Amino acid sequence: GDSVTQMEGPVTLSEEAFLTINCTYTATGYPSLFWYVQYPGEGLQLLLKATKADDKGSNKGFEATYRKETTSFHLEKGSVQVSDSAVYFCALSELGSGSARQLTFGSGTQLTVLP
Amino acid sequence: DAGVIQSPRHEVTEMGQEVTLRCKPISGHDYLFWYRQTMMRGLELLIYFNNNVPIDDSGMPEDRFSAKMPNASFSTLKIQPSEPRDSAVYFCASSHWTGGATDTQYFGPGTRLTVL
Image 1 (cartoon, rainbow over the protein chains, first blue to last red):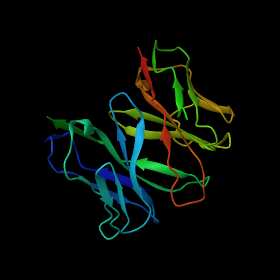
Image 2: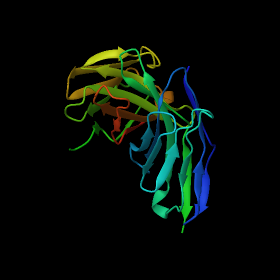
Image 3: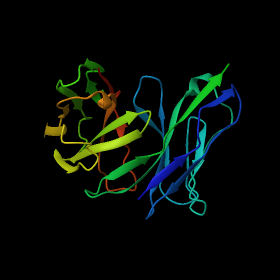
Image 4: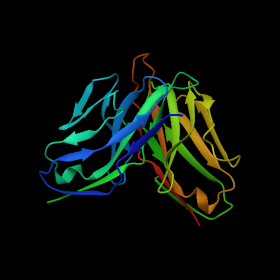
C-alpha cells in the first residue's frame, strides 16, 4: 500500500537558518503530493502541493519539488522565522474506492525556531 | 467562509460513557473525512463520506465507533462505550470534488477527547 516516510523530529533551528525536512513516498500509481502544517491547537492547513513529476509547489517561502526518480518531496525554506514553528506533515493522495483522493500522511516533523 | 466547524473542542468523559463528536463541513463540499491523531499512530483516516453516503469505513477501529451524515451540513462520530485508549484528537475535514488532479482537504480545529 501507499506510505509516506518523513524525517524524524524534532528539528530545532535558529531564526534565518535554512530548513530541509525530508519526505519520501511509496505509491502504486502517480500520486499527488502535499505538505500540510499544523500550528499548536489547530487543525492541519495545506501549505503546498504538486501533482506531477518535476512540479514545484511553493507558498510562504516554502518550496518542494516532486521527484519521481527518487520518490521524494522534500520541504525547504531559505530563512525560517519563529512563526514557522509548527508540525509539518508530508502526504500523498491517490484515487480511493469512492474516487475521492484519500490522504496518506507521514508521521509529522515538529519544527521549533528559536529567536 | 467559516471553515470546517467541530464541537466540542474538548471533551473529558469516563470510561464506558457515550461520546458524540460533531462536524459541520464547508458549504458546497461533497466529501467529508474523519481522522484520529495520536502520538503513537499519527494521523489515521477513520471513515469518509461522499454526498452523505459512507464510502470507506475500513479505518474505523471497532464496532464501538460509528459515524453518520444525515445531511450535507452535519456529521457525527460516536463512540459507545468509550475506553481510555480512545483518547486522541479527532479531526473532521471536507473537500469538493472538482475532477482535477488534486482536491484540497480543509481541516477543522479538532476535538481533543480524554477518556478517564
